Image (cartoon, rainbow, N blue to C red; front, top):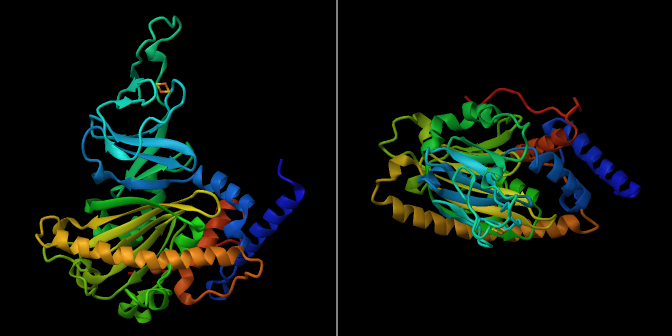
Amino acid sequence: MMQTQERTELDALVDALSENASKPADEARAMPPGVYHSTGFLALEETEIFRKQWICVGRAESIPETGDYIACDILDVPVVVVRGADGVIRGFSNVCLHRMARLLEGKGNAKRLVCPYHAWTYGLDGALIGAPHMEQSTCFDKKDYKLPDVRAEVWQGWIYVSLSANAPDIEDHLRELGATVTDRYQMENYVETFREEHVWDTNWKILAENFMESYHLFRLHAATVGPHSKIDEMDCPPGGAAFNYHWITKETSLGLGNAHPDNKHLEGDWRKTTALITAYPGHMITLTPGYFWYLCLQPRGVDRVHIVYGGGFAPEYVNDPKADEMIADLKKLLDAVNVEDRIGVESVFRGARSGLASNGHLSHLERPNFEFGQYLARSFRPDDVQIEHAKKERHA
Ligand code: FES
Ligand SMILES: [Fe+2]
């Protein structure tokens, strides 16, 4: 049972978060340090966010064939998403129904899901189709066994999973993000070319917040992308209930960052405009007219974040002979930027955990961070009408 004192501390923390979220953006401060290291706060995030909302696990076009799968964990729940013979991507529990071994690891292709422990075998619809040496178990009937379904839905090429039956359909949930930001890019047609998994020593929100502001580029990334970043090229309009974003409106020196000549759907300045998107809780996308890269974040304790890190290019570049070379160069740059970010976000976690930490005011360039705090507060206090999410004018 949670001790009364812990409850009081947790309440005080959520009160402080909510109070900050209720202010106008230009009065906002960073979130209180405790949200990054309190185990009670993490438990609340796990229950109210990660077990209830939609969590991105990867790209649909990266599992194009029948039997292609991605094994992933939603917190401590093993899940697998797999493409069936009918082309539909389905989610299942990735736990064997015999004695609970994990069925699949990583990413791959399987015509059948065979348990590595005693070889119970499931079809791509989750039904048990084989179980060796079970003939003498008189009450056993294969027909009684089917892997539990886990909701998996695809939105604009992204596979989202939810452990909750009550989460709204992903199309409804992210419609405003599409209309405001992504529809114009036709993100569903982008093609993933790399996908990796990492674990860093920081709180998941610190990495999320690092991604959602470009304020730090000129300093933390002074050795890489910093010199190419100008503050007046960043625009941070209000986001929506399920997302925040900002624009970077410059032509990129990297050819791949601008629309390909064969791209006929982006016009004018959109051909050189990049969107930096956070679909809450932790799906971060850098979407340019020519390429994209992304992170899918989940907590593994207060002090570790699990990261899916992937990227690829817009379809017009798929057949461009220079695209492979360009994406390899881009990957090198992104990796170098990630090294700098890792140093930054691991340092922030150590700072947040130190007894002397306090939360300073936010810059206008950290408006998405302010909205992220509002989203968290709304997730924990859905009936608190003081916590407004911005609904102001959209970027045209
Ligand atoms: S635990 Fe899977 S077959 Fe025994
Ligand atoms: Fe960064």
